[in-house]
Length: 336
Image (cartoon, rainbow, N blue to C red; front, side):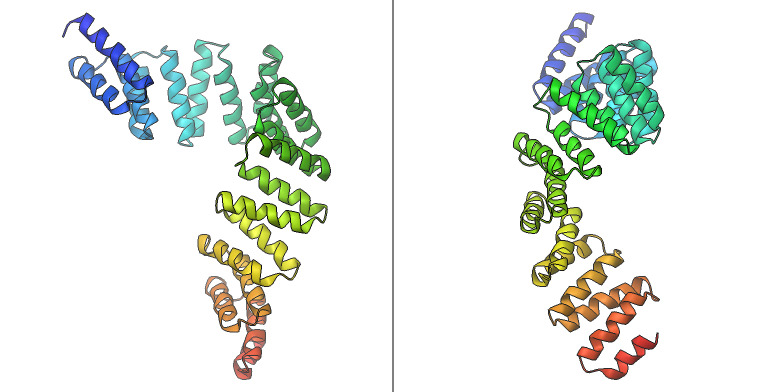
């Protein structure tokens, strides 16, 4: 295979990869690697085809071979960093993003990604410094302000976070993350009505944004708009079954003495997290309120299998067996 043939095959392979035809692209690239095992571009793009089919470990290994041969291959270093991030290998991603920036200090996407990784690693001050450097040099980078706001919120600096999110929205009002995060920062300051408006703006832009529905439901509940909150939690659950919205709506229904409606949500929570003691306690209590004592006993006994000395479970089992007229067993649980 001539040098020109290899270059033509590489070009064709990249075109296939860009067209989403990953298997064909990979097959062509492997022909190059069979001829030239250290061909860095082929190694890089083979890695990308694996990453784009979510075969991350194979993709990372291939790109690592490319950058081992050619350490200043910036695109490969950046794609390697992104793949490490996607696989939650944050410390390795940090090193890789820093390598990208050593090759190109103005690679703003890499800089923003590095700042976000520092946030995830709990290095809040380093993340703040990174975001400050980014927005000082590139003040129109709306997405960086979102990340900046997120790390400030993690530091409980909600005022600073609100300012950052507001700048992001002023730069680009079409970013649902900015509105969503603004809603949570406003909620943190108990500015519930403004929080509701922010969450609704996020949902208007992204109607399936689960976190915004959960945040909206919490804010509505804080303003004692219980029916709206319940409907919103249920909408969140319908979008994607999830423990967070299920548990919160179950608790709200329980507080409103709507026990029958709460039961399936508590049951879902316990099915997903079978070690969640508070979930089983709550399930047992609402089942008791509905006079479903045998089922309540099962829930409380599950708690004792996890925590044999749990006083709430022992007391409630005493109540349950009393309702079932098994007074001897009831007394035994009270005595424990």
